Image (cartoon, rainbow, N blue to C red):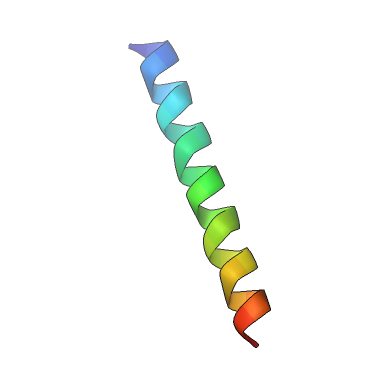
Length: 27
């Protein structure tokens, strides 16, 4: 359970980074 949650957190963080990067590239 803990490991899965950790992976989820990692995934969401990566998604956030991708969103930020795309936004920066757009502007």
